Image 1 (cartoon, helix red, strand yellow):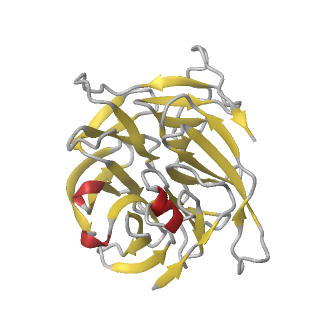
Image 2 (spheres, helix red, strand yellow; image 1 turned 120 degrees about the horizontal axis):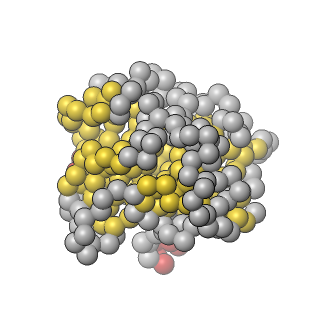
Image 3 (cartoon, helix red, strand yellow; image 1 turned 135 degrees about the vertical axis):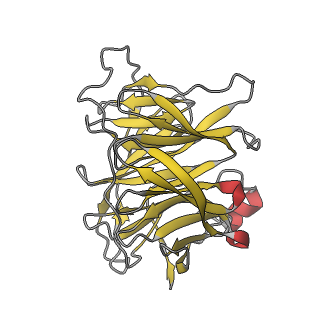
Length: 318
């Protein structure tokens, strides 16, 4: 099945990533990693888009460090994988450090990359070296009580993250391997085991962020290929969505029925000649893929986590 996606109105970012649909507010959330920005915007109807909605005016919270991804919290705020720590962002835009993993003290600069909550309420987040040194990253699990556990080490670019409809499988990509792996997963504890290949992307691009639909199909952003590719639960190719930019970073099901796929892209690292050839690089795109996604799982924090700690106001802009 061949599909295409339309660009959305919000201005392009440098490295837009981590889209997720917040059903309670009826907003899409996403980040611009290197700019340290967390955006949100509603879906709005447009008569000139063949039945596809657009994203409306966005609001932004600015952090003082790169932000790899955010997750919705049961307390009402957001949990951001930012810098090399986890930060709680209050609904007012203030943030405070919630927890931090034990990062190796080897002088290698690192940052958080992709992150998502599992069905048990734990937040999984990976790191990478700024210069993509092989094996310098890891995958961590943040539990609601603030405990951080290393669940996978010797990772180069931690990406992917999506659970099967029953929560018993986790799909994961260490991008340079050009392979999506699958783990067995225990939702109650967030324990992973039994890592094995799910599908090999080969020459079709580098697997980045992903989403899973209600039929268990895995929709994967293919960095460098200008595509999102969907795979059946047995790893067979199901659909290809064409995006008119090369650096496709992630995707998420959105909308009241979760029947829209929002796709993030990046302009980061492109030369001026490449940017001229890809004027839409860094924008978000949307399509209707003929599938429905799974509701997001929130981070299962306490009603008001750590708000007694000192907080730092961050800029919130329209």
